[in-house]
Image (tube, rainbow, N blue to C red):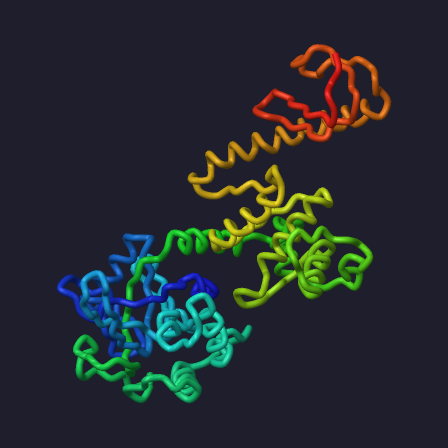
Amino acid sequence: MNCLSLEESGGISAFLTSKYSLNYAELPSLAVDSSDETIAKLIAKVSTDKKLSANLGYPVLIEKIHSSKTNQDFMLIAPVFLFPVEISGGAVSVAPVPHVNMEVIKKYSARDINSQVYDLVELENELGLNSPEVDIEPDELAARLQSIRDWQWCETLDPENISRTPPVSELSEEGIYNRAIFIVTERSPYTVGLESELSQLAGLDEDSYKNTALYDWIHYTASSGERGLPDDVPLLEVLPINSEQEQAIKRAMSSRLTIVTGPPGTGKSQVVTNLLVNSAWAGKSVLFTSKNNKAVDVVDTRVNALGSRPIMLRIGGSQYAPHLAELIEDLLSSVCLYRWMGKYVRWSASTAGIRVSSPLGLHPPRKISSIPTVIYVTGKTRLSIRWQSTLSA
């Protein structure tokens, strides 16, 4: 579940002070004492609301934010490391391995908001948090962090001796402090659903998903036979691509698993668009998904704008239902169109000058004097025909 930290793109923080109840409690050590009255109330909140999650946070960042809406400054508290806390039946357990809070990355990153996740991954790699068998004590983790990042260190980090004075709520200088807190925040519905699905998948045996893409993703080993499409096999280049993008498309067309990575602006959506069109051209069905609705919308618009009829069906929330019905009708009309076009092409090759009737009975018998240039379906049953030259009675 540690990968879900990447989904908390907004980070985790709380107001440092409030005239209402706070969403955090200061801790004297890196342990959650459920007998403490303040902590017990927060635990009870999490236990009764599945939309809430709890974390032990250490050390903490104190930062000032300005609200343009109220024209006021507010102080926030945000843990640097988040140790997920599981609460079940009153029992509390703290995960031994933390993840880095995106809120802190946002504070100190020089990248734009869309690229800050790369700073998060880079930091976790430097700290050794993404190693398969990660086993690192909090004191070593804190020492590593303070040695590799030139951040605003207001106190020396020492997990064995958490600072308590003054109380964290009275801190006013921005920076990172040797403090620990128990913090409760609301999770996005996306993350809640994802956790449930991952938990169900974790309980599956291999045989139950052996013939799925998930199995290839987890157990994939490269095959010597998977070398991509031959160079002489042409691709439909509906959007301009370079040689690396072309190679990625050909690999994806022939391999069970292909991973294409790159920061924003490097043409991943062009690769996806060309891949989808070439797959459709090859008679293949494709499921395109993304955690980002905007990414799906961009590809959907690009692909379906390439021709007069759509080849992609955009599904998801209820807002897409009306448009989905229209697309399905268009696709069904396209199938009907291609069948009638095939008949007319066969007729045009052998019946020039022969009197034939319209298949749908829309016109009186006419003589075909030339091959039709455009045949298209309108609505559900009407067939319209335009000819290169005038039809004769």
